Structure formats: structure tokens, C-alpha cells
Length: 347
Image (cartoon, rainbow, N blue to C red; front, side):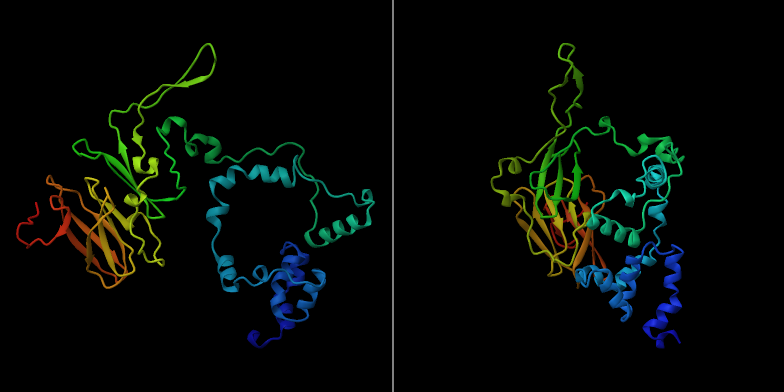
């Protein structure tokens, strides 16, 4: 049985040497990285190849199960993608064509140390093949070559780009710009749990670009931009007014569905806390107005329904306890309410 075979028998049955000679394995050094795990005599072979030294441990034995899993993974989605197809002719030119690096002329190397280094590299990694093509290879008929603009963003498609000074990635974006709202804004939440209230200007016109005939330089018309950055972030004062609490569970990766902003932009409902709660916070001063329990494990996501004329809606929270809870949001109270509680009717 194979499980009872010795390392030498395992290596012989794997036919590694013949596969390397047939170029089924790219080079001998890669082969040694594998068979060093079969004990002697392959450890000695490896040390001989590496001048008696092992490389860094994490490079050799980072994770054998993970390496095997990656080898078994289907990579056809990468190798057969449009991006690879449209650049395939560049690779052909580099290896076999007009851009190929030619084989090394050992007779032209006079320094014995340099010659020995080149010969060692050729023995282990081989050298460039013979040139087959003298003209650039034609590109493949991929979608990117036929319609390249479908993968590019033209300047006309972007009306504004806003860059935050914190350099923190954005985890959540909510845009509530209904003209009837007192606060028309786009609220963003970063991975540092900072949020910003960026006011929206409905009457702003798209900035246009003109050219001066005398100077031949572009001039941007001075127009109001669609968004203005949060004034607190700009002034860098009282930043605690734009920060959510820090009691998030580190085992939970915050995503877009971890937060919900009410339709009037006045409250943020956040999940992912270690104590199995979710919270309602006022966006003006980041004050916690409600702490709610209802799940037996960490709350991982939240969403809301469409709002009624009165601004009320349903909230749904999901948890790692495999349950979903439905809550009633009362816009007048600015809180989650009990439907049967007096004076807290739901429209």
C-alpha cells in the first residue's frame, strides 16, 4: 500500500524525475521544494542545491494544507478572463517573438564567477527558448480589444470625486437626497467607524471644462459641486461627534449591511457589537439614543423597508444565532417602538 511506502518508494512511484525531464515540472528547484518533505535523501539534495542552507521557514512550510487547497482550486476564471486574453499576444512576443530575451552566450562571459552563476541558473531554471517570430503577434479577438471603452471610465461618467483625509476605506454609503428632507446628504462610514454627513446640493450644475483660445489651457468653470464635505471633518474639531462606539467584535468583518441610515439622515443603526446588541445613534452628535437586545448571538446585519408618508418603517436584523428579528421604527419618536405601547402608533 502507498501509505506504508518509504520516502524513496513514494518518490519513485510519483515518477518525479521523469516528469521533470519531460518538462512537466518547470525546474528542478521547484521540484526540490516539494520533495524535501519526503525526508532523506531529498533533504540532502536540497541543501546541496542551496549551498548547505535552508531558506526562510515560512517560505518552505507556511501551510501545506493551504498550499494543497490552492493547487486544487479551479483557476479557469483567471486564466480564461478577458483581461488575460487581450494581453496574451504580449506574452507571446516576450517569450517567442520580437521582444524575447535571447539565450545567453556563455563564451562571451570572461568572469569565472559570473559564468558559474549563469550556468547554475540555467541548470535550475533553464534559459530562453529559440525565437520563433520576428514580428509582433496579432492580438486575440477578445471583447476588450473589440470594445475597449466598455472597461474604461470616461471623465464624463464621474461628476465629482471626494477624498477623505483619514485615508480609511469606506464600508457604508447611504444617499438620502429627497427634496422634502431637512438634511439632504450622503452619509459614509469608514472602517475606523468614523462617519461623515456630506451635504447634497440639488441645484448644483455639473462642472464643465472649457479652453482658452489665447493660452490653450483648460479652464474649469466655477460652479457649485454636488456635495460638500462634512464641515467637522474639514475643520478637524470635535471629531468625536463623527465617531461610532468602539465596542465592535473584532471577529466580525464590518460590511455595508452592518449599518443602516434612517430616511431622514438623523440616525444610524449599527450592528456587530460583542455583547449581542445593536445601537441607534444620533448623527448630529453621535449620541447613543437606544440600545436594543433581541438576539442570542452577535448581530451581523440590518436593513430597513421603504418608509411611509409619516416616515415610519420596518427594520430587520440578522444574527449569528440564525434568526431574523423585525422591529418598528417610529420617525416621530426617532426610536424603535413597541406597536402595542400607548402613544406610539405606527402608520
